[in-house]
Length: 281
Image 1 (tube, rainbow, N blue to C red):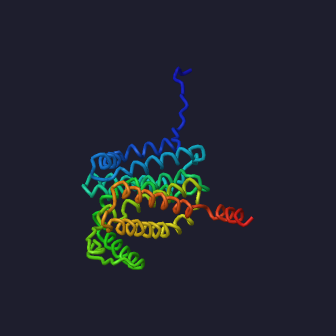
Image 2 (cartoon, rainbow, N blue to C red; image 1 turned 180 degrees about the vertical axis):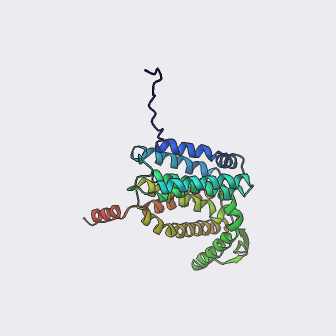
Image 3 (spheres, one colour; image 1 turned 90 degrees about the vertical axis):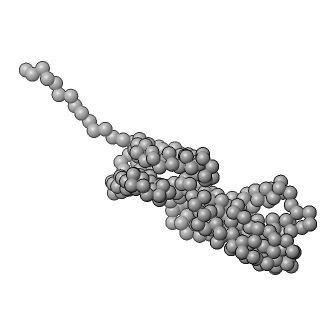
């Protein structure tokens, strides 16, 4: 009789959270880049807020995650992860490599995510976690400032105010008021889309409905930014001007109104119908 004994071995199975944690670890260069950009002052630290929200929603669904992944999505996640790290090693622009890394994590989420739960808002949060604000300000900030100035001039003219756009500035009652970078609406757009993703994920809005409503979020952001700028310009053009505290208060009030509008927009259709029935009754 042989003294050797056969030791049974069973394959190691990673849970969904284990896999997501492992993949995040593999993508560590992109995570380091994200945190560095958030803390060194080169970009607003808004991406950390998106990451925190994403972590909350994943933890909220932890018990419903699939026991076995969808292999096509998992395979795609592995390939895209390799592509993201290869882009990093080859010196591709860090933001471009970060977008690929975000798509890799999105593929992993799709592999493990329960079929009945919406996924698109979480993909949106992954993309919003990237340091986008400074880059968007650089590439589209000027056109947005010009658009805001022109639209604000039209609004003010409709109310009888002598306003004329000059570049990205407004000539109002003999005073030149500049529409500066913070008034371009880039930060407001980030916050609007963050609110849309967070609200849709919280209310379990179906993916198709979420995607259809995203253009309306952009329209709300543009309208609210024009309204904010028009009010500020009208008040700044007065002989007494406008205090810094009042300026900040108006900006916060417009952000709050935008948040309420976006959350209402992202309500599931059946919830809107129930509210309508309650109001009619």
